[in-house]
Image 1 (cartoon, rainbow, N blue to C red):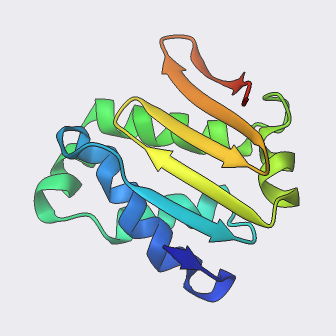
Image 2 (image 1 turned 180 degrees about the vertical axis):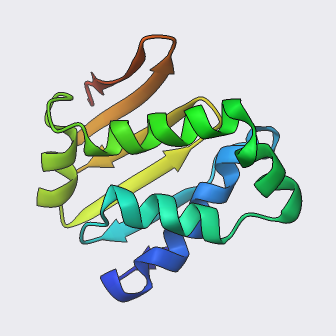
Amino acid sequence: MIVNQVSTKKALSEALCTFWRDSLGWNQVHVQGFCSADQIIASLKGTLSPVEQKMAATSQGRIRMKQVRRALLDRDSDGLCEAIAASIQTTVLITLSTIHVSASKEIFTLVFGVKGSRALPIKVG
């Protein structure tokens, strides 16, 4: 799915909902432009079903949302945010435990762990 910045919020909302539905596998969205971490988190919270809202309201859900926000805002994570902002097309793949971001020809995986999150670059080709 290709979206412009005007419809980015809705597309990211739909993609991020799979954050709580790991068993459904991958969800993918190609984003043109850049969406702020706060906008992504607000989009996610605004589109959760009642069951997902209960899950997000648990302490584990709140911790995970904070981890996502920190990871998206962390500009020292191997240039992840800069790569997203500079790319014409960004691919975001989301599961319960990781967010895979492909910006230009660089692919990063955001890994969430006990000590926080970090971006790991993956070499392509």
